[in-house]
Each structure stands twice: as C-alpha cells, then as structure tokens.
Image (cartoon, rainbow, N blue to C red; front, side, top):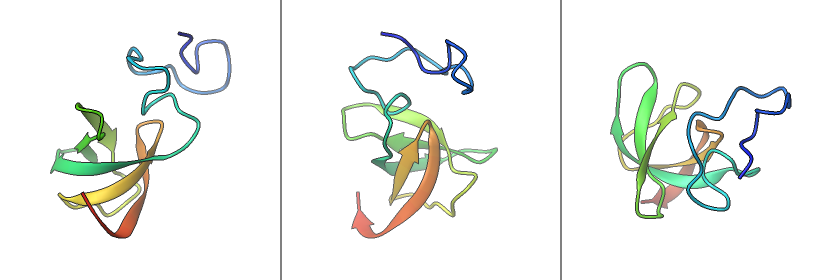
Amino acid sequence: MTRRGQAGGGEPPHPGPCHEEACITCSDEAVPVTVVRLLEAGLAVVDTGRGREEEVSVALVDAQVGDTLLVHAREAIAVIKGVTG
C-alpha cells in the first residue's frame, strides 16, 4: 500500500505502516475514536474500535478520558458532544 505524503503530496510522511485498506492515519475522512488515556505534550491514546489503540494529537481540542473524538491524520479535530465510548 502506498503511504500518503511519500510522493510529494505536500503532506508529512506517514508515521507508520498501514495494517488495513484504510487506517486511521491514511483515510481521507475523520473517524470517531474514544480517548483511553491522556499523555504529555498534547497526545492521547485512543481506542479505534478496531481492536487496537493508537496515539493521536489532541492539541487542537479539549479532550478528556472517555470523550469521543473525530480524528484525521492522527490529529483530533473535534470532540463529539453527547456521544460516549
């Protein structure tokens, strides 16, 4: 699978390998995830709902453990109100 950002697409290199046809970091749409724990430096571990956890940036949102976030390219872009993990 080709990783986004490798062929001069103007995006930074993909931070890791894809394990599915469209992974959380490669998809062209934001996907909902649940915050499992907050880390230092504006990062969080999230449950992708696909049986694995991933680390994402929460620098742009006010995230708390248990929140459902919309994530695009490993960046949380919104907290979804009224949705629980």
